[in-house]
Length: 173
View 1 (cartoon, rainbow, N blue to C red):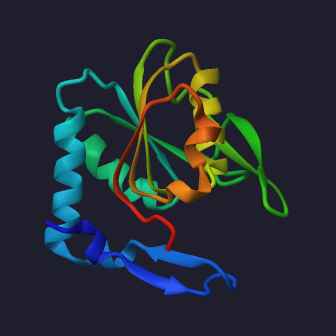
View 2: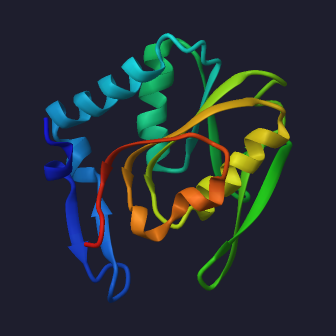
View 3: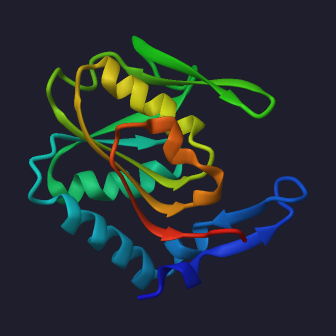
């Protein structure tokens, strides 16, 4: 299955000079969606993972399926103010300002083995903040998993020391 062919590229969105990688077309394709979920499940099924951390919003889609299939817990990481109850937070830099991610303070226990899942890694700001949240909880961060990586934007550099798995790369496009 060529997953890359199922991802729509939209030039000039959200701003000129950017090519947006739209994974909704992949998710609408039953064979492609199943393939991606199957690859992720096969990768983590025998690794003793305790929790999947999914980043809002598409990380919820892939991470939710992965947690369900593995029979383990799912932990949502959301933008500030979207989770009820007590949270921990991490602020990160954007091109024009900052943003903040939150996770429930009781979502992960010390020493649990965790995989963070999101649809795409670009500049690494969001995943970098999520990694810091997971580490604050004392978890054993096994890997960060993505469907797509844009390696030219060097997002891996913002999560030094954490292994990265990406199924598809879009370089220099």
